[in-house]
Length: 237
Image (cartoon, rainbow, N blue to C red; front, side, top):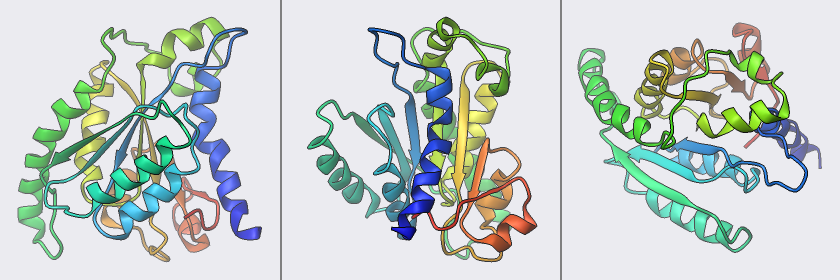
C-alpha cells in the first residue's frame, strides 16, 4: 500500500489544471483536455504508460509522439490503448512520428542540427492539435485557476497538456509548444516527470526543460535538493 502513496499524491497534481479550469457545471459534462504524450524508446515509454494508466477519461484525446526510428513504442501504445478501451468506450488516441533529435552517443555539434530538424517537424504537428476556434487569453495560469465557472468553460478548450519523462524527442515538441504560447496561438501546460533512473543528476532533456515546464517532478530526494523548483513525490512509476 505504501508503494501506491506517491501515485495517489501525483494524481491531484496532474489533475489540477483540468479540475480548476474546467469544473463541472450542474447538468453539464466537464470539457475534455487534450493530452500530448511524448514517448521514448525502451523504459521511457513503459514509464509514461504507467503514468497514463492513473489518469481519468477526461484526458482525451491522447496524442502520442515518438521518434521515427523507435520500433517498439507504437506496439506498446496500441496494446495499452486497447486495454484502456475496455474500460473507457470513448477512448481516443492518435500516433505521430518525428525525426529523432539525438541518437545515443551522438556528438553535441551534430545534435544541434538534428534537434532543429526535428523542431521543424514538431512545430506544425503541435500547431495541428489546436482547436478549430483559436482565441488567445493573456491571463497567466495562476489567474486562470481563479476564473469563475463560466470563464473556466470558456478557456478550457484552448488548453493542451504535454506529458513527458525524458526522451530527447520531448525537447523539440516542448519548444514548439513554447513558441506557440509566445505567439498567442496555444496555451500548453508542460508536465515533466524525470525518469526513475535519474538519481543524482537530471537527464539532458530534464536540464533543458527544468526552466520551461509548468510542473517538474523528480523521484529522488537528492534531485529535489539540487533543483528547488522541482516537486518530489517519491517513486511514481
